[in-house]
Image (cartoon, rainbow, N blue to C red; front, side):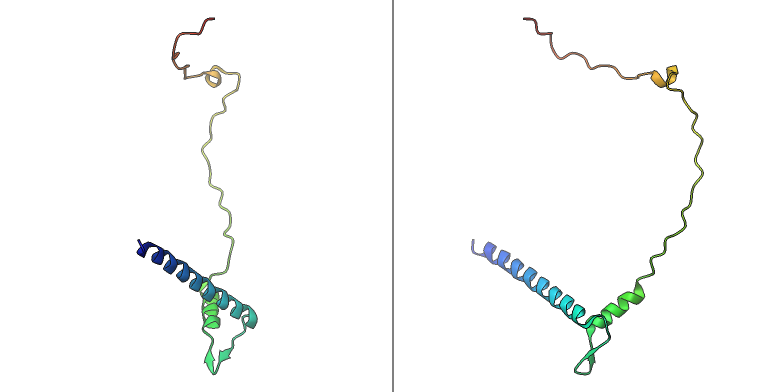
Length: 100
């Protein structure tokens, strides 16, 4: 019985740690504004990852729109018999009509 709340607490702490690290990473990236910089002579990992992402991501080009030929569908006049035909039927009654 005590194991279940511990697992929930562990998941909550893991999620809190993950969100905290993500928030600190975003704050660090915003503070430096995407400029290449170093910490104690070592290149910043956040800046390196952002630089790689800029190279990997292709430019957003809009491809030319291709219009495919479509089959011609014959026009059916709304007043014709073919247009007005109804293939269905009403369902059978479920019981006798009520009479008062």
